[in-house]
Image 1: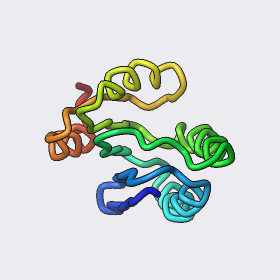
Image 2: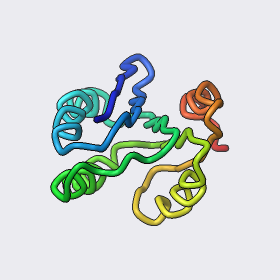
Image 3: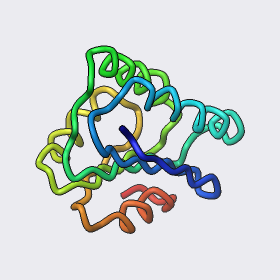
Image 4: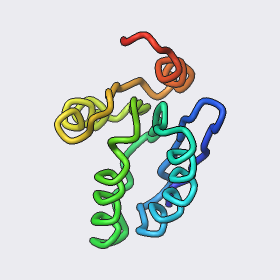
Length: 124
């Protein structure tokens, strides 16, 4: 399950994976962010606030996740991974090969810094 909030003023999606990811999580997020993308053209950023990656509840959920990333990655300018997990370092480097967004890893206590990075217009 994913808990998420869309900050429409700054066009930032904050996601917090709470348990195994389900296919329905990505359907619901698309219903929230697709209108924002249509209205603004892109999301300024995505913040993934996750102490650890919880995995998927099924193969179908994993496929839906990958399809969601494929369909939306070109509409997200920056991705901030906020985690103390070593997965954050790996994901930062790996994601650069699969998404067009600028990706950066932040330690778990730096959620505010991640938000500031996304809202700053100057490259970091």
